[in-house]
Each structure stands twice: as C-alpha cells, then as structure tokens.
Image (cartoon, rainbow, N blue to C red; front, side, top):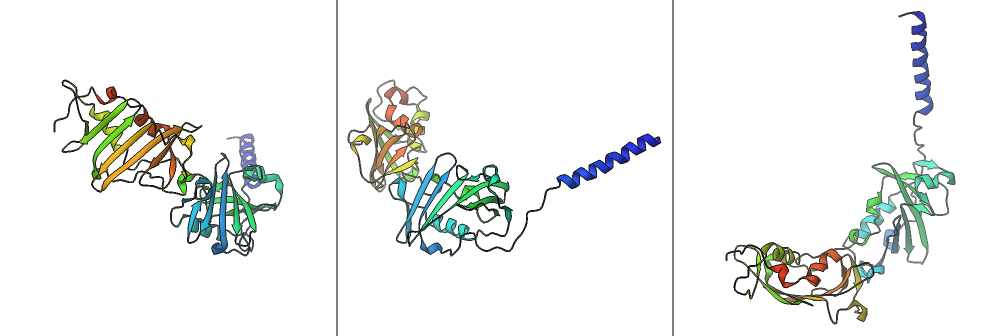
Length: 313
C-alpha cells in the first residue's frame, strides 16, 4: 500500500468519525418535572372523550359507580376500563422534554388538526382539559402535548392503543350470550319461509321436515347455527325502538329454544352503512349487526340448507 492510499484511508476514517459525531442522535433532555395533568383527581373526572385520526369518537361518562358510552345509547363500559385509563393519564409527567416550539407539532402528530388522539377530560366542576397523543418514538413511549401549550413531552405511562376511540375497546360486544350446548332447537323465519333446525346426536344440526329424497347441507346449516351463540354487534344503538329500525316487521327472526327457555333475535332494516338493526330478548339494547353477520339469516332460502351429504343420527 503506497502513501497516497494510506492518506486516503486515513481521510475516510476521519470523515466517518466527523459524520458520526454530527449525526449522532441527541439524547432527549431530562428535566425535573411534575404531573402533566395538574391537580389531577381521577375520582373527580365525570366524562372522557377520545377522538382519533380516522374520525372515530368515543364519549364515556360516569354513571354512579359505573361508566357508560354516552354516544352509544349509554351502553355499559366494561368494568375497570375507564378507571385503568384514567390512572395511566394521571401517571403522565413532564420530565422528558422533546420541544418547546410549535414547528414540530405536525411531525410529532400532536397538532390541533393532525393528531393520533385528542382526549378531553371533564371534571365535576364542569372544567375541561384537552391533550394530544401523537407518534411513538419507540414501542414504549409516545409524544404528548397539552392543548394551548407548545411544549411536547415523551410519556411511557400510556400508549396509543390503550386510548382507543372505537366501541369494541370499551364494551363487551357479545350480543347473543348463550352456550352452544344450551340450544335445543332453532327456527328461522324470513321472507322466503320458515325453517326449523334440530341438533344431531354427536354434534351438528339438520333441517327438519325433509321431503323424500332431500338431504340437508350440514355445512351451511352448522355455519348458520354455530354463529348464534356469541354473536357480536358492531355498535349499540339504544334502548328505545324507532320504526325506521324495521323491528316491527323484521327481515328475519331467529327463535332459539334452550335448556332454560326461549330466546328471540329479530333482525330489522339496514342502516346507511349496510349494518342491520337487531333486537334480542336477552338484552335491553337495540344494536347494529355487521352485514356479514346478519345477511345469511335474512337471505337464507330452503335450497341453501339442502344438497349436502346426509348426516346419520
């Protein structure tokens, strides 16, 4: 190796060191800081609103010792969900400063019009406090900013997914809460007719009143019946029926005989998004069922339940 090559290699090493020094990530400043939410009292919070960047919004309010979803017919929140989240909010602090200027708000996704979560808390005295949760620097921390303040901090007390704005993160979405083994008979009534199904010894279901030469389609029937216990809704509507829901003249009615009695599921009209309104005797709430969950009940015809290999009793 000649002197020129040695010089060039040494120059390259020096340049690499300088570049590493110039672009080495600057450590986040750690400052002495207190709670992000001052005068925090979780027990004094009466309402919580969360909005996300997809247009979803959840509003939960305190109802005595419980919480309900105010913008979903006051449907009960799963026990402990609100309390857990409020505890995480109270643990946020200001000891990890990111920036004191507004220029980075959009990039950090904590701007008033560009955020991942906007969270508004209402207290007993009627006062409110709003803050934003933004992008994650790592899987363990997110950016957070109080409304009307430019300062942005990092917090590991809460993550984006815990502060969800979708109904399924706040309530138990199971609507028909029956054990599969408790069903002793099912009848479907829809526009095309009335179909009765009975269980088969050893498992599975079959269509009753088969004509000579007809065989049931076990797969189609089982898929339909097995969907009933644990059927989930997309959103609660409320406890008061509206003629527009179509439940007085339902598109489909499922009558379920069980070891404890009889339950009924009525599926009504479609909402604007394609979901179906539904009412179930085991719940006080009218809900929306996904079109994919309800369509087979509404549109099922006799031919759907025939044509498979028969199943021996």
